[in-house]
Amino acid sequence: MKMLVVFGILLHISQHALAGVVEVNKGAESVLMPCHYKGQIPDDNPSVTWTRNELNPNLVHLSRDERDYLIDQNQIYRDRTSMTTDPLETGDFSLTLRKPKLSDSGNYSCKLGDRRQELTVTEVRLTVKDQQVQVEVKEGAESVILPCRTTANLPEDARVEWTRSDPVFMFIHVFPNTSKHHKDQDELYCGRTEMNKDLLRTGDLSLTLKSPTDRDSGSYICTVYRDQDILRHKVVLKQVKGFPAWATAVLILLFVVLPACGGVLFFFRQYYIPVYKVKLDSGVESVLLPCKTTVCLHKIIKVEWKDKDERNVHVFENGSDQPEEQDQFYKNRTKMNKGLLRIGDLSLTLKYPTVSETFTCTVYSSKGDILMKKEVLLQVKVQQVEVHSGVDSVLLPCKTTVHLPEETKVEWTDSKDRKVHVFENGSDQPGIQFWFYKNRTKVNEDLLSTGDLSLTLTQPTVSETFTCTVYSRKGDILMKKPVQLEVKEKDQVQDPQEDISLMTNQSV
Image 1: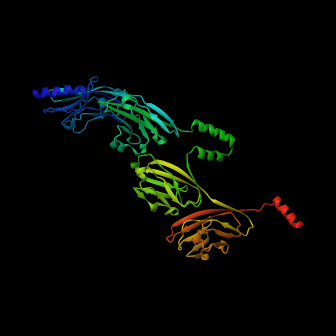
Image 2: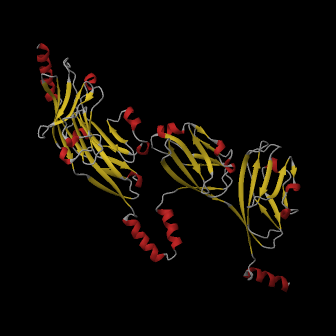
Image 3: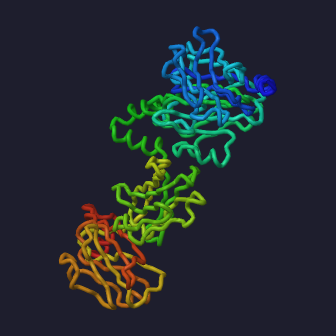
């Protein structure tokens, strides 16, 4: 008898402390109605019962001896309820209700008892809402706000979860954002979400999502855990395709001013799609292609640099460089920071840049999802030499201040990678020279000591890009410089000053 008295007192004390409100949206996969008990468990055939008084029969779920007894269960809950496998041992009597309907809204009682007495542990007010907020965002927007509001002055232990269930369940953002919760956040949203700092005071639990894309479209659930209340709000994000209003206006203007479609596409690529530009003169030893990120660095598993032909320029994966995946053209010419994942600087140092090129820096997660993608346009200003057709020779300049040892190799090639002139082992190598350039080229005899690697080409006939490459004894490139030769036809009309000079000479 004393045991029953103590049992009843404990139940009465916990009844009001554990009462709560649970909200869920119609169409949710399931909803959890919490019920927790820390008191004494009856010795005589204890059971946990969930009921809803406004129904007949009122039984929602019955668990006894770690087994479910659902013969007398109201049929509207058939195959839709479940509890943990050992509720009496853990004290967790919570009920999971699958596929909640509007008609499931009502008051539910969680009771603990034996064959003689049954007392209420807690009551839950379940509200199934048939409402959702739809938010539209234009393609290319910097950010979008997913609204979620509740009562102000939330308790300090309140917790907020933003989640998605499609295509798979994932955490979008969790408050408070502890290191554990930060780790649970899905990679696709790492570094892209933010909530108000004073949300507990204001009750504004809205989520700011940065750089929204089409893959972010879908349903989001804002769940608030407040004392024993569980409140849910559903927000549907829809991305609107098309250009912003200003872009549309520019397009209309361009189609009127620029009848050629190519001009419009070129304009939009240059001004609507952001591309970082790096300009430099040819012949520099190296160039830095910038790429920095604010995404969660611990989520990064792979960084990949490619050129416009989809060749691998540099690959960083699983904490180290992957030179075996690098294209031969870029071998021993690239370098990234050693602590790139620590500082977020994914920039690439490229040695001996020779031609203009578009490079792409792509960051992947462990799942293969793209976390970030940036383009860098490298514009190399090539030195030009202009001559008139028919001249005897032309000098193609190439100079260096770097000390060159005796075993240095100097190689001039044309745009088709044909050998124009080769200097190796202290002398010219005409045997490997392309036949078209036989007996037409010359370099200084003391080129290694002076650093003047310029090439004299006789009888230039066509415009061509020539490249001067300097190799070490091991075959590493020490310098690379292109020179653009422009061969122009002589003007038919002579300069008036030349006519005057000719007449003067004739009169004399």
